Image (tube, rainbow, N blue to C red; front, side, top):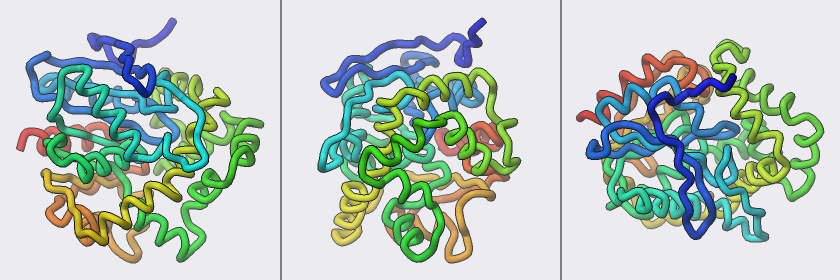
Length: 299
C-alpha cells in the first residue's frame, strides 16, 4: 500500500520546453503562492510534514527539480549549463507561469535554496519573499572548501564524468543513505518517514538521475560560482525579504554565522532563525520550521 504524503494535494505533470516536471499542489487557488524547492539528494517529498499546514493559508507548490524525483533528467553538457542554477531558475519560472503565477514566495532547502537565491538575484520582480534553509552562498562554500578539507562531497561529485557516477552506482542506497545519516543530528534515518525514503530511493537508484545530481555539483563548481562572483563584483543583492533558516548541527559557525555570510554577500537585510536540527530541518524539526515559515510568510 502506498502512503500519500500529501493528502488533498493534486499531482500534476507540467510540460515546459525544458521537459516534463512533477509537482504536488495544494491550498486555495486564490491564496498567495509559495514554491517549495527540495535539496540533494531528496525530492518534493521532503516537505510532507509542513506543506499541508502551509496550504491552510497559501497555494503551495512542491516541485521536483530537474534531474530529481520524477521530473525530467536530461544529460549534462560540457559547459555544465543544463544544471546551472540560473538554468534551473528559468525552469522554475516556466513551471510557475504555466500554473498562472508570475510573482511568488520561494522556500528552498540545500540545492533548491541555491535555485531560489539565483532566481531572486536574476529576476527580483518574481520573488515576493525568500526563505533559505541551511545553506551558505555557493561562493562562500567554495572558499571554505578550498581552505580546508570540509564538504568533501562537493569536490567528489564535481569530478569529471563518469567517475563519481560509477562509484555511486555500485551502491546508491548505501551512498545516499549514508549522507542522510551523516548530515542529521541523530546520525540515523529516524527523522525520515519510510514513505519519503521510498520516494528518495526511487530517484537516486536511476543512473540518469545519479548523473543529473553530479551535473548539479559540476555546475556548482563552475557556472554557479562564476555567477556568484559576477554578482558580488557588481554589488547585486537580493531585494525581497529574506529569511536564513539554519539548523545547529550542520553548517560550520567557527568563522562566521550563516546570517553573517549572507549579509556580507547577497542578502544585507536578511533575518535569521536558528533551529535545533541537522541539515534537514523540514523533517528533523518540522514544528520549528513551520513556525518560522508561517511567521515569515505572513509578515
